[in-house]
Length: 277
Image 1 (cartoon, helix red, strand yellow):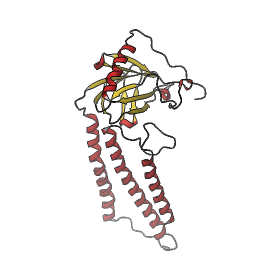
Image 2 (cartoon, rainbow, N blue to C red):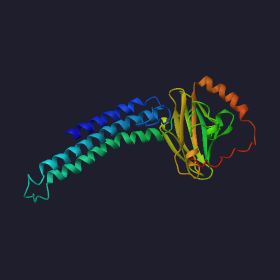
Image 3 (cartoon, helix red, strand yellow):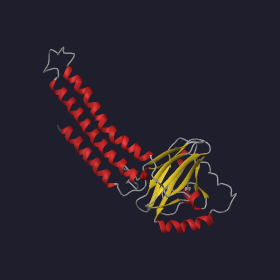
Image 4 (cartoon, rainbow, N blue to C red):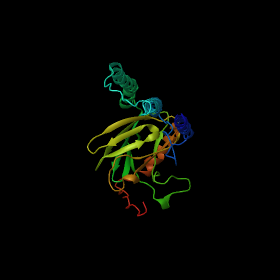
């Protein structure tokens, strides 16, 4: 019983810790649980995660209780002559039917979530993310078709308060309260455009154009990283998205059209990773 109490206390502490980090738009030291949801997709993922968490917790506690009871009830000094029973029809039916029922309970919201993620609603704008070794290139075809590269800031380039390994020299600026289509591809190897707070993880495959949609609820800066093993600097290919209100986004577009209008400018190549990393 003491072990059971400790396990229950650990589960309770985990649930409290999950709530306690609900302010982060980026990974935090010693973080437990998911990042706070910034899109409707992530809200549904978090809700589904909570359902799975309690199902898994109940199953774990139930199995632990059975193991403890069996160890106590059928120990050697209570059963000097072991039972020779090999089959119990009712028990075998139950331990087959109950897992099937649990899987059905999990499958229904899972299929709904997959459909919600995959079917694009009517979007208001499109951006394109192109994975390269080892940076991201972004295109804004609906706003003058300007293009820019987003490369990770090295340690000596960081300003106070910026996040190491997550900041980029150019951030992706997107409007809030807007349905956005993100097209993702690559030029060399497979990458993955992943932003946890958005609930988005989509492969960037050479020769293929994948799509995902966003609807960012609140302004803020949201961070992600490439999530496919793409080579030497795989861990140094971050994604930084700044979500702003629509009027601010329109003002940024005007400036971005001027800033990134220079055609033929060479791409700034990534330096070799430092020996300390």
